[in-house]
Image (cartoon, rainbow, N blue to C red; front, side, top):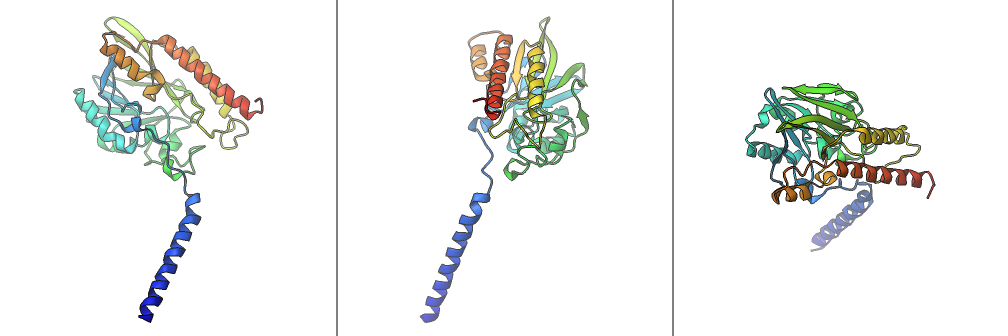
Length: 299
């Protein structure tokens, strides 16, 4: 009985020590990566205009651009998104295996974590803007803001072509222009392409991201000294782009759900929204300027 009592006491002390260790360790654990239920909620794939289709979730946008020589996919999204993207492509009557080129909006896990898997499944060429190429090749570990957070890391993927501002990506008669719209990431990319449908040509703009994330240091940022200058250049670029069809890295950027509802009510082409594009860019620029002024001590 005495031996049993001593064993119980020893076990109790071990449990207390383990609990104390947890208390000491837990504060050092990074907070979980931000998420949104709409990022993983399946969404019926749909035709946008010309040869451009939506194959993302309710909010994480992914675009399939079809051509006679194979297809282009913009954004691989989360690791868990790959089966959903594949299913959406197949629902539209296409095949994931026909994807020849993979592009992204920017090198954050919610747009690039599935890339390694997509590349393995398709053998596609991965083309990424200078400034983001190293980030995707290190799986997010070299990101200027999130590099130290393991919960923001993702499977590394080899980049086949490093893009620069103004570079063209061509496949089967389709020409996509890569615009470096940095700040959100060092190589954040806005894609533009002209698309013709029923004899009319539309300028399509797929916005990378003009957002200033919580915690971004816009002043005296040693990891990204030119961050504010890059945001300034980004807004100049975005405001100057001709845009009829307004799209973006998240469905929420361009009011996707409302536009699909309008289409369901019979509106022929609700994605033609030049005023909505300019309004969105103006609102995001003001948010940037407000945050910059705050960090400079102006408020």
